[in-house]
Amino acid sequence: MEGGILSNGSKGKELPSAKEIEEGTLFWPRFDRSSLLPCVTVDARTGRVLMVAYMNREALERTLRTRRATFFSRSRQALWVKGETSGCYLDVVEVLVDCDQDALLVKVIPRKEEDLCHTGRSSCFYRRVVGEEEFWLEHV
Amino acid sequence: MEGGILSNGSKGKELPSAKEIEEGTLFWPRFDRSSLLPCVTVDARTGRVLMVAYMNREALERTLRTRRATFFSRSRQALWVKGETSGCYLDVVEVLVDCDQDALLVKVIPRKEEDLCHTGRSSCFYRRVVGEEEFWLEHV
Image (cartoon, rainbow over all chains, first blue to last red; front, side, top):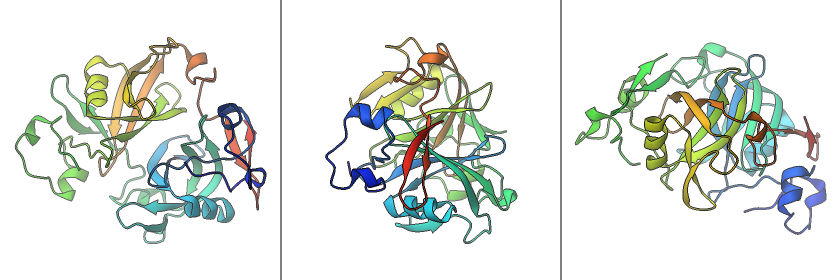
């Protein structure tokens, strides 16, 4: 795991303890083997889950500094300012981190809700899994 | 990407088109290079985000068949029935999949809300990132 250069206190610091990571105030994001963190994006006003994407360290720093959600596209292997194509920029209201600091929850206000998903929907989660023995999708 | 043996229609079927994956009713979960899918777990009653975890194919099939959330622990490299230690089992109300079928949204009712997180909290997201140049955590 990479260390947490995002927190001042972590510079040159040894790997924090599990307790520090879980209970402390040190921001020490634990990127995965691909140097990515999964990010759940929700609408800050309603709490609705909009999408799941990934950030590398640079995307995370840009998101925090510009307050505009920036991800890392795994398919394109490049930084991706959400909305740069569709106009649906995501204004960041709040970023939360989970207990072991390997996932983020990003609360946003989308600029063009109808274009949140590239399929032209207001959330990427528009189908539920149905079935008992075999499983299919149903539009919600 | 592995194919979608979870859907009857996919047996022996060629890789579906992007349009089929995004708009169709075929459940064709696209596991990552580690054979995992990220799963956002939310409280079915409030929509609150509780945790992020991963499922491999077996965890997903068990979750769908037993309606009890089962994940794959990356640290232990083993199936993990959420709640088997804490008693905070997650009863699954609904499972949604995203546009490109590489992330899940699992709506649950936790049996023991106060033990959702192993730190003894009702959500794993209990700290926000604060700061402008350097970043720290603050308990919410």
